[in-house]
Length: 134
Image (tube, rainbow, N blue to C red; front, side, top):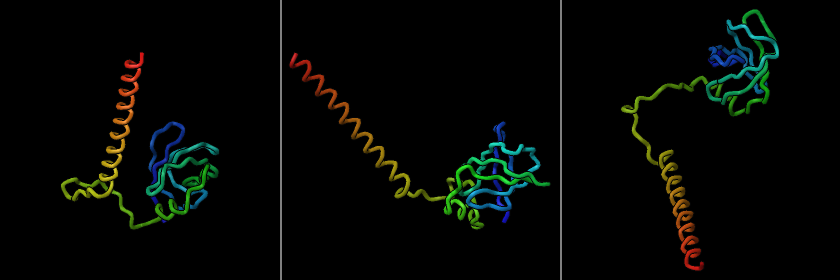
């Protein structure tokens, strides 16, 4: 199965690559870019995080790479899911779901404000006591 990905080598420039074999421990990719054996690279595959890898083999049209830390089974399944389509949504086409992430954000802001009020109030009380006692 062919999977598109973005590779970054030591130079840091993004290189579009095609991955033809992907496993928990590594991948085979095709790219016209020239890479050195044992070179450290970063690979971004849709459905996974960016992972560090080492170039282990060189072939006629690409390279075999080994993940420095193997990816998880969940990452592998997500990367190989052919139904996953990533695209930018137009905000006018989608309804806003206030019960999900936005609600979590509102809860976080509430608790942050509460803690700040406790800290500022405590500092005020301590200051007032210090002035009153001395």
